[in-house]
Length: 394
Image 1 (cartoon, rainbow, N blue to C red):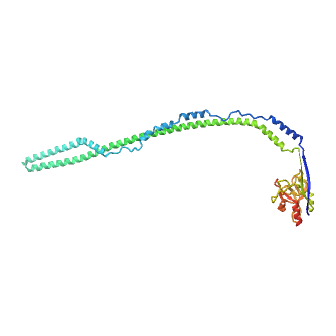
Image 2: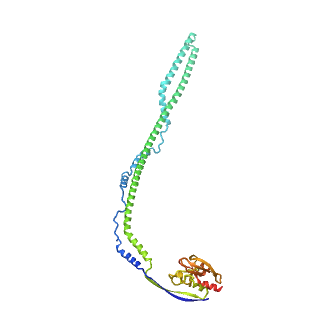
């Protein structure tokens, strides 16, 4: 049931076909015909367009134009700073009222009082005439009558004067107040006119600045489109030049890469140490358990341990079972159970995909994980020595 080491030597030689050699020589011969580098002399980025140049000229000539017009509004606006309007002056109002009363007294009150005086005198004369007819003229009765008439005249005169004076004063005061209010309104109106003019100047300056800015933006936008279009055309010309310079070398490099990936005239030898088993299961290996001598560098088991071994031969799928066998279920077809080992591990008859030779072996997903190794290709391999030893110990 124990295993014995066996050393196996292999050699391999690949011959380069005549057509491949000829193709390689042809690619090498084309190297001298590749275009040599020459500096690009075509157009570069596009310069400024006529619209952009016009915009720059307008920008220079219109600098400060709107600000200058708006600046004319400064003095009118500054003069209105702190404007409170003309106030009503009580002192002036009284003086104006008195000045308006003088002609009123002369034209209205004086004639009215003079008329009362005349009426009073006429009444006194009439009273005296009546007393004389009664032979009482010159006595105390006349004095009382004259005094009564005079008192009534004075009272009437006083009442009329007071009424006229009150009416006249009210009218004069209203006229004086209206005059000051008119002057106040006129001052406010003038201030409003100056303010409106200043605002109009300021708005005109802003409008002109806005129009200038709009013109500049339109010119720059139109010029930018032309500049971008010209730059794109120049870039297209440069790309064509670059393609003509580099494309032959790229195509030649692709051909060289393809030829380089084909087999070349090389030979290689190697040795691998395998284990020979006396376990009856190895008799099944005669039917081909799988890829013997497949312990390639980079192969690790389930525990992450590296597996050293020989090389992968070109007929690996048909080789006899050795230390490792390709036992990944994904590589097999026509799988048929035919028995079990002593520890219960199933044994199958199967074929590798693309291979018509029937084989016998186990599946990597049904054995002890410590006997399973992961090949760099991603497929599982099984250490049949471990599988057989485990089955023999059961």
